[in-house]
Length: 472
Ligand code: NAD
Image: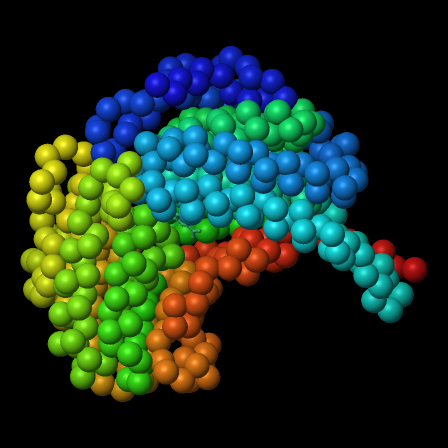
């Protein structure tokens, strides 16, 4: 049992001023595996004061000190890697093999990448009669989701440390446990008091309070578009910087010269990773009509290799949904696809065969999906792939861009130049050409309702900086 009763404020574990606790569930066993405290507005005030005070010195700390902290953080994440992977698998239900790589490996590399970026980052430049200086923006509030809990936290904490900012983190209530481990690590490696503060609690209560807080200079939010809008509204009166990483409904497009076998095989993993609970998942597959029969056949077969199971089993590729609420929501979308007349080619409603407990759904594939259908338009956030066909490349691009979101995308072609041309036409923050891999040093973020601002790499660091011009 992971029981946490205190919040981390000003370099100490302290009693919360809020009342009660939040249960953390294991979605594959439905058992309670942890408890975290409910922080209140008063706890946020205390954390904001500590962060404001610490900003005076941390903003002037040496680059070598920040680099040492980031490297030490990366090393500790490696040292405690198995414990963190097991913890995140227990609270999110992520298959353990994927947890080791994506839930621990990626954050470890991201922390280190910021130490590296600091080695030759340009803090000042001369433009005619001006010196242009980059300075840390101040006290930052971080509100994060449950699906890649530590990765989404490190994507904010590491660049903020690198920039010289101080911060208050509110992790999600579904998967908060790795945030508490992170606080232990930052304490152990000697991050000065007040630079990092952790206040857990309910988003609808303290999330809005953090966003509107006059002592907070910037809020960085990752989560659903609805909550992101609410954060922006709460932040508006204090004119603070707001960066948002929100939902997606990303298109994966096969051009007519693509290899149908490769497209079909890769499309499943690109949709079902982390049991489909990935904001950048490629959930709309767009293929030429002439390819459809071959692609459907392979995809239906390949979908079986994602048969859900115990996330602690090494061979499991699809775990449960994170919560009962999420299981119901994904099931409702599957039902809606059936009712709206899409062709179910694999999966469907009900529990997967052989499973009687846990928040599971069947990985599901729909073909003949049209752009009027709800399953085409809305983010499902589960292992549900929707497929449609096109006749011309122009039509393929219209379909790809037919979304309120613009977070990610994919394009497949034997001709890389042609695929890049198509990628440039997609209104989305990142595109993978022929399965190009995720890059922790490339900016990550969305167009349209997928958000604004960028995380990771040098672009991610710049979000935490103010710019000053000194005229001579
Ligand atoms: P969510 O919006 O319910 O919660 C995210 C965080 O916001 C949590 O910490 C929650 O407590 C808090 N919150 C909730 N309501 C709030 C409010 N009114 N004001 C302030 N804070 C509030 O999202 P979720 O269910 O945890 O995560 C799933 C969503 O996040 C999906 O839509 C997914 O696409 C998106 N997401 C986006 C990215 C990205 O980088 N673009 C990454 C991961 C997840």
